[in-house]
Image 1: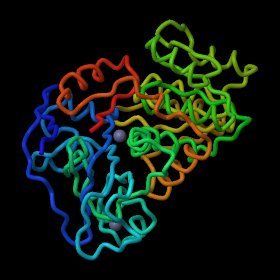
Image 2: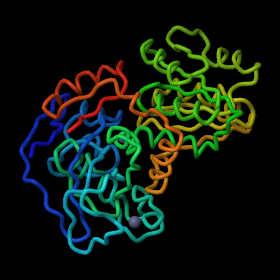
Image 3: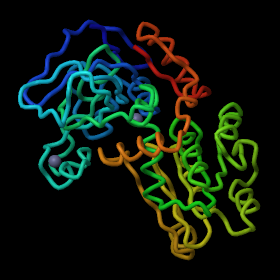
Image 4: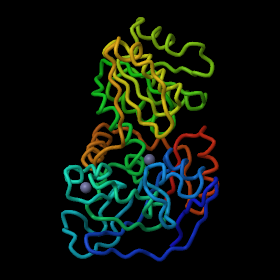
Length: 350
Ligand SMILES: [Zn+2]
Ligand SMILES: [Zn+2]
């Protein structure tokens, strides 16, 4: 089979790999949809192995990219219970492997494994930008019948990450939330938060992304590059008090700072964008206003299943996120377009 490999510095190759066969406790998925996620851009743009090193994981062997896997079970290895996986089952994959037995692994948070995450699929282990993918059966999450494979791919990282962050923030329908960055994660957060009944103020420096945010239910949009005082603009939209909640999906230091400063007293900010830094004046930005700042890293297997149920039960059109649908052979063009960060989300459909 062919698999997409990031060779570093905005270059990728379609390389040949043997078709995988499942070992004990493992399954092989026939991939039907594999999403492009913002964090893939780190691996794509950087030097070879740089993104893995940034996560504290050693640069391993050549791996197939893609960490939003969705497809059907094609083969089941020895020792896999029929309740875990059966051939033909529609599934998503929780793209981490841990020890499988510690507190965090046992509660579905393999990325938090006390021994350190052993594999991040698409980064240190073969991912989903290929026809087949091998993984432990315990990393599978059933895909509800009502959801497309593309929607399942989105839930496997970007949309699931947005859902996880909104839960960490305890978003309520009577809240106003400011969402910084309207890429795939931020836009998903806009869509889900609006669906949960909250009022969304969406921020991005790209006009196409702001237009999309409005279509996805944002009540107001702000372009920070054209706004003299972003915090004042948010206060103006919130009776001078500030937003109840904020979410930074941009990873820009200035946006993170504004995400904290735009909050009303007792407000909560959540950071999901990876990398970079933020500078805060602890007394005025946090203490004086009883501000809570939360970091949120994706979701558990249970959270992933709950997000999928929520999307299915409410009929949320997650497929609308995808502006670009690609064949694997178009991988170079797909990442070139995604790299420009103007489009919505991209997905490979097999
Ligand atoms: Zn563990
Ligand atoms: Zn991701």
